[in-house]
Amino acid sequence: MKNTLKSSLPQMPLLQSFQKLELLSPYHLSDFQPFSLELMSYTNHIRAIALTFFIVGLLAISSTLSFEAWQFNPGIIKENALLELAQGGFLLLAALLQGWRAFNTHDSGLKRDIRLGIALFALALFLREVDIDKLGSSTAWDALEKILRVITLLMILGFALHMSRRIKSVTRNLGKILLSPTVMLTIPACALYAFGLPFDRELFNIDKGLSQWFEETFELNACLLFFCASLMGNIKTDVVKIQAPSF
Image (tube, rainbow, N blue to C red; front, side, top):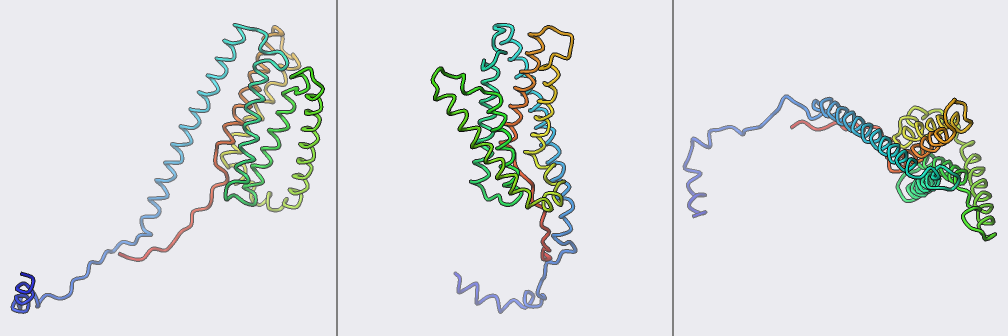
């Protein structure tokens, strides 16, 4: 059958009279790039809005549960009680995740420095929030707290020395650093900590217990944001434009 078809083709002069066909397009793949970048921009906006609603809802749920727990047991706002231990748990997880992602991903340079800086900051806050020496009656708890404080202080000093050599690089990329997702969540976390300070010092004419609840709840939400920041991405890479061939 194949041989018959091949032998019949030379006997069809009409087909042989056709010129070679070429499929040409007046468009270029790069012509579609603005559309793809615009679509990517819309997608990023939608993701940012969805993430914002999720975070706000998460903080609302956290505050509601904190209030209900305080109504049930007012003692949860005391030192090393439920709320402070929850804060310490979120901070410790944030420090560990940021440190792990700094050393176990392909990030380098400022990307790694950002995560290390936030990890050390979260670890320092953890040691501030949780009185390790009061977790047990043994003197080992006191020794453990002092050892952790010394190690953290040495790491912070080493990190500060390292960053002092990269001031120009930080200044040059400050916009990207501030707009990176993990930093954008860390900033409101610090703001929530600041909101809790007036209640800590009882600057408002409200009940002392309610003032302490506001302080601990603001700090709880701040620690929750630190944890969420550890799950976020880092500085986004620039879009690389590649000239595409015609088709």
